[in-house]
Length: 627
Image (cartoon, rainbow, N blue to C red; front, side, top):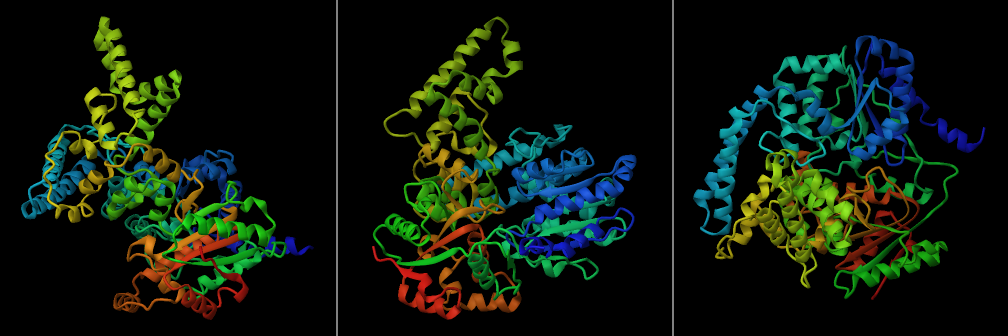
């Protein structure tokens, strides 16, 4: 037997443990530790296939199914295809799964919304009473009115609707955050929903469990504790790869002792040198180590240090890429090629490099919006990315078929009922739609790109698309008399964040859309979760990150821990060092062949000394670039 074949058997015990847990007669819940490149999706698929072979007939006869929750639609599609579209398995994203449980509970949904809206209105009214007169006050008043109208209209809604991939902007629709919050609350408070869950899905497997919304995870753990002999909850994940703020902190510690805890030791993705590096990165955390494949290449790792104040960071990163060409002999590292995936440890760094900072920055500063902003599902985003952007691109390209498809899909101007009611005047409606499109094209092709606010107001005036509630406050003209003090308030409210984001030029929307879909050369830890690339450049900079959430200086040993860090450590809370370590681990572990790390430091000499003391890099693996 070759060493490569032996590698494939290293994790056989873990795979066998999972298969043993998946038994309809004697289910056992489990938490699978699966580090970067461990092949957890392969283990999941094989275990489900095995169960369907053993007990698939029972599933068919009872009408029960295996449920698998994924984090992205792409992951969902991959698993569905690997399982050959088996009808006994339901694979869905967390939002789609949650909605499948609570859909139809309209009276309970109405009651929950009424309570929630009442609390949101009270919070806004309190801020209104304390706030200054100006734009923010006007927008708060409009938000209060909008929420009040929604609350007053709840009794008229017979059935609520929701789309996991849509924008959910009509009065009877729910947004993504509401669906998750409601599902968690209902699973805790409603025994009937619990029984429905375990009767429908005796086995529930969650991929990327470390990033599942904490409230929903807590609710599912509670269900499992209540029905341990009837319900198998299988968690696949790696706490070192928890990257979203709403994931459950301390998930591994919350797992009951009775659960199985299989562990996969192999890293099938990374070269040996990268595997050794990421083992050292996480050594100060949970001390879990992975084993590189015996047939894995050695790989190349270099850390390039540059002053934080360097004149051109673009030139530094190009010089690092050229040096990687010399070290590896791989011309795909050349700066003018698209062969390198550049990963920033902070989204604002990517936004600056890719050119959508003015749109992204204000929204990212408002913490409750971050998760939706990063996956493109946040309120109001789809209006720009899924409705306006396709139409704008079609108009600029002069593609009549794409123009017609874009407005036919969601424009109220071509709504079937509206056209039917127009009767003999249908032609006038079509002319109106064409005039609206022509006007938008003129606006887009102006010498100075229009702002998002200008495009929003044009669309509202022409009724080209419906305006989401969250953007309605910005349609009317408001007095330009906001005090400078209001700028501080902007980041603390959703309306304030949108107000500043709408000042961005419209072309930034396309760059943002490409970024969140993962098709740009730039990305971050969130965008590349589960993915891999031959050549990876990780760019880190405390100055660019501009925040207290991350600190590469503290992680690398060039800055002292603060009093808050020490207090959080003592209390077992997440610290900036913990967060930064996870991000660094995720980005470095994407590399299949070679890895370059560009570290902008306010003291490169001290950084070099600290890194050598940590033992993460050899002396000849750290180079200083002076541009």
